[in-house]
Amino acid sequence: MSDRVFLDSNVWIYAATGHEEYPAKFQRAREIIGSADIGVSTQVVGEFANVVQKPAKMRRPLTPEETARWVDQMFVFPLVEVDRQIVENALFIQRRYKIGYWDSQIIASAERFGADVLFSEDLSHTQKYGGLRCHNPFNAA
Image (cartoon, rainbow, N blue to C red):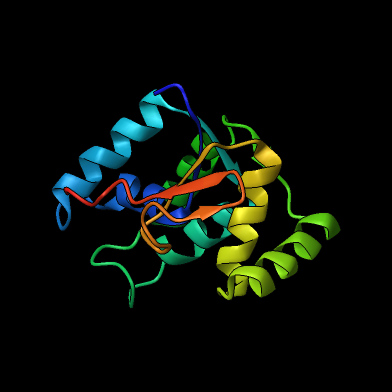
């Protein structure tokens, strides 16, 4: 992969927890993390940490220690910190594309990172937001 890729939290969640319930997505997420020029944001890290520890969301939630190990792994990659400019850009993206705020904030963070592609299963596959292309990496999984 030669594109700069920004990862939504669902990619990280499948990589950390999907081996039993979603083996194809687990494998694909691991491939992406191991082979791409990727970036993450503080929002993505926070969403990941929140979701993977919730019994209502996970068949087997991660322990706080397991979660901390994954967060440390996420911090190896370039981190986009959500600041005032990201929030303002997210509000603009939300109005322009008529999508939810949190998705808009991920797009604003991906743009700040300089991503060509945003990997997410939450946004429309192949949709473009300015110069950023969305791709669902799990379409075949």
